[in-house]
Amino acid sequence: MTQASPDGLRRLVAAALERSNTAPANAASVADALVAAEIDGQKGHGLSRVPGYAAQARSGKVDGRAVPRARRPRPGAVVVDAADGFAFPAIDLAIAELAGVAPTQGAAAAAIRHSHHFGVAGHHAERLAERGLVALVLGNSPQAIAPWGGTRALFGTNPIAFAAPRRGHPPLVIDLSLSKVARGRIMVAAQKGEAIPEGWALDKDGRPTTDAKAALDGAMLPMGDAKGAALALMVEILAAALTASHLGFEASSFFAADGPPPRVGQFMLALDPGALSGGAFAERLETLLAAMLAEPGVRLPGTRRLDNRLKARSGSIEVDDKTLREIESLAR
Image: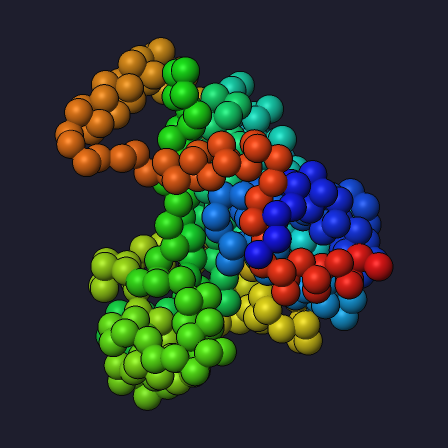
């Protein structure tokens, strides 16, 4: 492992993407998101994504020079076309639009289409909460989970994130994907030739498997079994059907450089707590959280990310040597 500064990593990632046919503004947006994920310990959405992103920008699977566009078909509705580019510039635009509309309307929703992998969903919800809004963020992804009782993967791991502003504290952030474990853990096991625990996935014939490679060819099991599969369906409807985007089984891989753009979707809901609660939201939320924290052993969701950010303020974070060398090579 190597110690590197967050600012230096942002510059390095941006340079690697710019060298890979990505416009400077887009490269900066992506770099901010990936380094933020690395700092928070979400390495599967962090620097490990840079080589794949760069390869897709070079092949044209992702348009690194795309300019997202926003329109408002209704006062509280925002539609953002990511234009087959990276998701993060489109997310930036959607957050700016929602932050302007929600306080006026009381509530606003954004539908993002023709999009790509959008990283840590909680980060996007958190940014809205930092603007005083309660936020819900959903995104669909390429097929990984089968409907309950089925064997063919149709839904993605389909993350759900929620964030709420707090009085005198960083926002409360809840972020989860709907597979029993992260797909990345199975990919790592397959690369190392290691077995996975039974109960994580099915093979292509719908049988429980401990073979990681067979799991990748089959389907992941949802958290909460039938309930998790129902939530994955809900996300698919809101993030894909409602945004006029590709369904999980229609979307191409986020990892491979070849093939057409994935064209997945994201859905964001922003609520003005003052308008809806008559000003009581902050007190009610803090009363609830205080009751939780009064219980021995209870920690609020997302606490680990704050601990990791405190460590990063020392000026450096630990980065995998191999990943760093790959990014440095791309940036030359």
